Length: 279
Image (tube, rainbow, N blue to C red; front, top):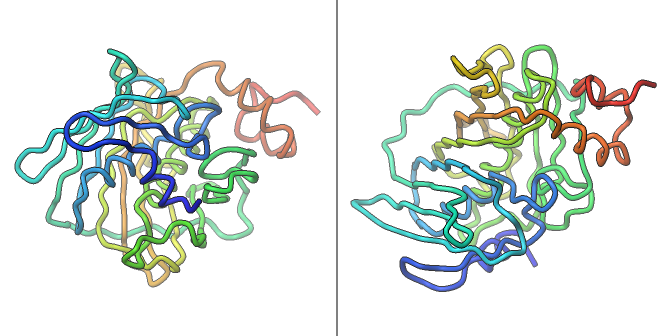
């Protein structure tokens, strides 16, 4: 099944009360939906075209392969969405058309910059995930990002790149910006993405976020604010994001244990020095 088809198949029903069951291929951390995939699902359900703002506030982890309630409410051109498990709200989101303000995207790190860790199953970077992007991001002293060549499964019927590729790449870069700044793993909790313009389904996408722009939240340094942009192969800004990362102490230990199977320990040590075994 193609990725865009799997995203469509995740939603059952119509109207204000629907059922969401995400394929395991959409996971980021094990058994937890990648934040970018949930935000793209909101975009799919809302159904607008043109420049638009997507927002998601993640309150708790979103499980994959488990039926969840999807609540949809429309008002004046916008769409409010909520994912819940029984009576517990997991995510609140909104999709709204905007007048695009544009901006200048950053260039990604050079191809020989430090390759960031990958996993087997992650929707963004997993080696063995047939629905995933198979992306490899890199980091130098200034920038986190990379250039991604689309796979066939990410083309819409209109021949443009599905928003799930953009939201996922932006979210993944934000995760690594936060991890490099804190030495901890964690999760992205607030995603605010602007889709400025469509990208051709076959065009390369370059993602970049400035490390110096990462800022801890005043009063609670567990939370860091990150800023990431995406440009198409012709240099156009196609998406940008302000994403909040929260460091969760101890999460990196479990993550590193799984990643050691597919990453050299010296690479993991550069990102998570407190959690990677000494050589």
